[in-house]
View 1: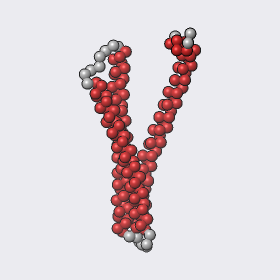
View 2: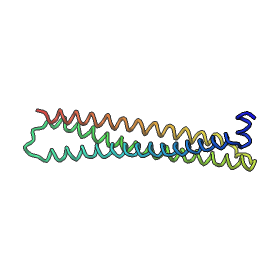
View 3: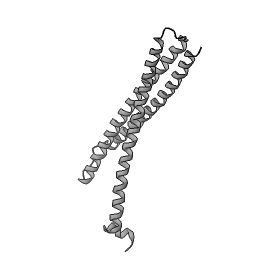
View 4: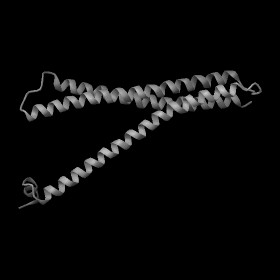
Length: 167
């Protein structure tokens, strides 16, 4: 008996492969959790850093003895505000992507249930699933783009603040 026949009959190779599969699927789920935590930390950091930069500039402007170039500080505020808005937009993109992906998974679950019961899927089911997946992809690209723009805004705001503070 070869290995493929052994696997089909549920022999030792099947048990080993099933254990490996289960272990790898568990690791995959854990890594997805890590990815989620890192992404969430990055989004929080974008909002926190840009909001903190605005507060720091307000604090600095409260000092009457500071020699500043108001034009560059105004630009700095604009950049930090833009970056903060982009950070919040990235949150929105992340939220929407997960909502659309959740809908796609619900369509897939319905397909699976229907396949088990030998039931047909409703008309347009496949197109609806694809549309939700496409919307999720667009939303996540939007969120990533907004995150990048948030970083660009922070760097621009920092440079403008530096130019506004250096005599």
